Structures are given as structure tokens and as C-alpha cells.
Length: 319
Length: 245
Figure (tube, each protein chain N blue to C red):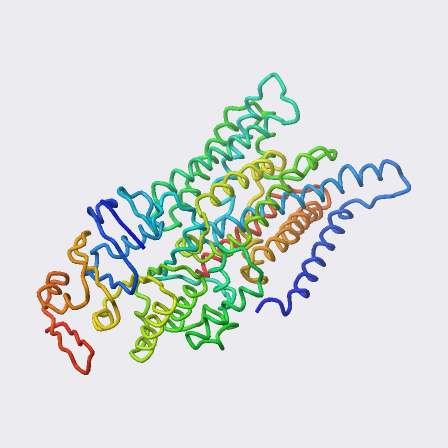
């Protein structure tokens, strides 16, 4: 049913990826490749930014794809479930109250985002356990409530902080792919691989779970075990994205939804499409955020949120 | 095949003790009697029960979902198909618990569709099928799953009279040819009385009677189950059972 135009669809998606990468690498000031400084700018700023955007976009899209399937709800994503907000609160807490000592490899924002993501996961799981037999919309509403709690707490941190911390927090909560070298890219890479691994390992199970837990149970799928693995691994990976890039909203909501309309229900195909589409979309939005104003760039989180919120409204109205 | 001892679940099922042997077993009772809950306990979906459920001598709590799916197949009352999927792809799900090649899998799917005369539906979109057609595909999914115990929750509720006669005929054939135990929930007493080997009657979360079909030809027993009078007659070797108005 879906194979007729599959190659054509993937070709178009790859074309979008190619365009996004080109746009990401060459948007902004023109570079002179005979100049060593410009070559350094190309590798340290532009290439690393494109790679970071690609990895982060993929993690968010695959996270959204799997959560939408697990919750059998098109509005589920790491952002709407409150995981990204929990991670943001954790990271914001450590930006404000950074301990004096350092830990190897991980920054305190990293630790905070992980802890926050896990905290939100525990919150969601608790609601899920209490309201198991109820509509999954309850979980989403709980996620939205948790979002508000986290946003309020971040605002408290901003309010009680000094001007430097407040500015850093305000800037960080807008979500950005600003970086100075390849280090964040290398830190993100293992999480990129983990998310791809988990989605493709369980693609057949996700296919069945899309049609309801009862059906999945009776076909032999251990739904609870798979849900737990996804919750933990996706939350950790989203925590990594948030700790490095800040909260970048709506990619996990929008990209899987559009791709499902185009590519059908099979998660091995959707997984590949989400890697290309999610990565390409964030790289594109980042390049757009750098090109919209000639004098200054705006954080990419603003661009994705503007596009995503409009899309969210469209979906609500369509429902 | 299935042995249940001292089963309690929330406040819905109370002290259920029953042995289910081979054949087609009708599970009857008024709405809210606990039929679907009991079947969900046996199928491993409702977990937090007290008491023991043994499936083919194995304690249900010790069986993995994969193991259970090869022994037992549960067809729920309702399955929501929100996304486009072909009949073949949907039936392919029923082979999840088996490690086998796609060719073998396709043969099993084709044979199952042939048994229910729906070979032409293999590439159709499941989402656009009628309620009756969908129920037949669910029967095919039980055949494809290849398990020896089937739990069917109102499997023919959307079928027209002709199709439901055909449905039960197929069910009986499959049951006798493949030695399958079928637990069948239905409110259609005509089909229950004419097609089942045994009947289990439930009321308010307990089993009030388990016996051969002949026992249920007594109006008083059916009145105890449904709290309404029935007219039961035998015509041309078939039982006719209608509620008296």
C-alpha cells in the first residue's frame, strides 16, 4: 500500500535535508575559504552547528514519534508531556546554583537536565499508574500542568537571580544551537545513537502498539517493559538535548505527525524518515533564525515554537 | 485447558472457581456480570488479581506475553483502527510471537483468509472495512495466531444473520478440526444454545452455573441469569430462544 511512491518520498525528504545542510552551512556572512580564520569559522561554528541541529532534531523527532505511538495520541511529545520542561528546570537550577567543584565530562547543566527529565518521568509514570484505565488525554493534561509548574519555577529562578544569571537563563530558555567547537556535538552523539537504536530495535512492537495496548498484549508484546525502556532512554536523550541546546519546542510534535501522514504507520520507515526529517527541520529552522534579521540572529527555539504552536492550534481545530 | 481457583479481581469478580475443557464454551450473563473482566484476567491483561489461573497446566503469572500468545488468543470486543493499515499487515501482527520467515507467514495469512472467504481483502485498508467485515478479519487474526485457546468477546455482534450463521459454522469447523478451546462471550442466546458444547453463566461477578447446553433449556436458569422470562422451543433440531415481552 505504501511502497509505490516510497522512493520518491524519501528522495524529496533527502532533497530537503540537502537544502537544509547547504542553508545551514552557508547562511549568514559569506566565507572566504582561502582565509584560515574563515575555515575555522566554517568547521567550529557552522559545521558543528549543523551537526548539533541534526542530532538534536533527530532525537526530538524520534522521541515524539515513539511517545505518540506509546500514548496512542498525536499530541504526545517530549515537550507536551513535560519531559523537556522538567529537564529545563533541572538545567536552570544548576545554572543558578552551580556548585564550586566540577565533575569530569558532564557539565552541571547536563546533570540538572537529566535529573529534571527523570523527575518529570516519575511524575508522568505516577499519573499513569493512578489513571491507568482512564483516557490518555489525562496524561497529556498532567504533562501540560507539569509544564506550567516548571515554567513558573524557572521564572522564580530568574527573578531571584542576579542580572548575569537572569540573562543567561532567559537566553537559555529560548533554545539555541550556539556553540564554539565540536565538544557539544561529540557529547550529543551517543544519545543520538541510543535513540536510533531503541526505535529500530522495537519498530515491530511500536507498529502493533499503535493499534492499542490490548491488541499488543494479546499478540505477545510486553507493553509495560517496552514503555519503561522508551520512557527512560528517550527522557535521558531529551535531557541531553535540553542541557546543550535549551528547550526546543514542538519538533517532537510536528515532525512525526507530518511524516506519519506521508509515510504511513510502519516504524522502521517512519524511523528513517524521522532521522532525516527531524534533523533537517531543526537545521533549517536554525539557518532561518540566523537569516531572518541581517543584524542579529534570533534563538532557534523561537522559530520552532512559532511554527509548532501554529501547527498545534491547527491540529486542535482539526480535531 | 484453563483452571481458575479462588479468583478475585477488584470488586468485579468474586471467588471464581472453574475448569474449562475443550470445545466451544459460551460465557453468558447480563451487562456488568463480569464476563469481559474474567476473559481479560485469563488473557493476562488484567493483572492485579488474587487467586490462580492455570493455562494448560502453567500458572499464568509465570508465562511471558510471547509464550502466552502462542497458547492463547484474545479477541477484544472493540479494536480501534485509527491509522491506515492493510489486512495483510494487520494479520502479520498475529505472528509476532513466532520467529519465522515472511513467506511462511504470508502462506498462513492467505490460508486463514481463504477459510473465511475473504481472500480478496488481503490488500484492502482495514480502516475502511464495515463492522461485520472487520469482525471476520479478527476471526482470521485468531486463526493466524495459531494458538489452541481462543477467548472471543462478542465476536459476531456486527454480523448480519446470514454472516453470523456462516461465522459460527466456520468457528465449529475450526474448533473440531484443530482441537481448539473457544470461550465465547455473546448475548445471542440462539447461537449460544445451538453452537456451544457447554455454557458458563455469570451474575454479579460470580459463576452461577456451568453445565451442558441442555441444562440451560430450563427457563428458570435463564431467568436467574438475565432476570427476565424466555420462550424456548425446539424446531427442526434447532433451539429458538427469545425473551418474552
